Image (cartoon, rainbow, N blue to C red):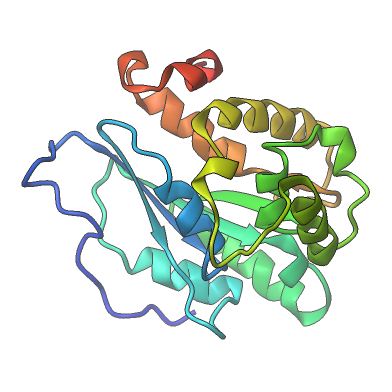
Length: 218
C-alpha cells in the first residue's frame, strides 16, 4: 500500500467544541450511504467522521490508506468499514487479508458487512432471521425498497433510520453475528456496524446519549 499525503484532522476542536470530545474516524468503501447515515445522528461530545471513497478507489488497501492518512489523537478511534462482497473471492481476497493485517498492526478497528452496508440499514426494520438468505447486495437493496417503499443510496432519508431504531439494529446484528463464522471475514450474512455503535456508547456518558439508545449501554 502506498500511503497518501498526510492531511489535517477532519474536525476542528476549537470553536464550540471541547478537547475531550470523542472522535471516531470511519473509512468506508462506499461513496454515499455510510456518511449520510452517520451524519443523521447528533450526540453531544461525540463526533463520527466518515472518510468517503472516490469512485473507482474502493479497494480495501486504498480505503485503509485514506484512513491512515488522517491525522488523529491517541484516544481517537479509527474504523475500517467494508463490504465483504467486493473482496472475498479471487485475487481480491489476498488484498483484503493484507489490508486486515495492516489495519491490526496500525491499531485500526474493523467492521465488515456481508454482503453490504445496506444489510445494516435493513436490520433497523427487519429481524435478523429475515436477512440471512439474501444472497447479494442487489437482494438486500430490493428488500430495503420493499420495506421502506423506496431506497436510493445517494439520498438516504433520516426518517427511515431514527435513533430509536439503532438499539434494535444493534441487538439484531449482534445476535446474528454471534452465529456467523469466518473470523475477520464473515462467511455468512452479518453486519458489524453495531461494534462502532457499541464503542460510541461505551465512550459516552449516559447523560450524553439519547434515551432511545441508553438501554444499549454496556
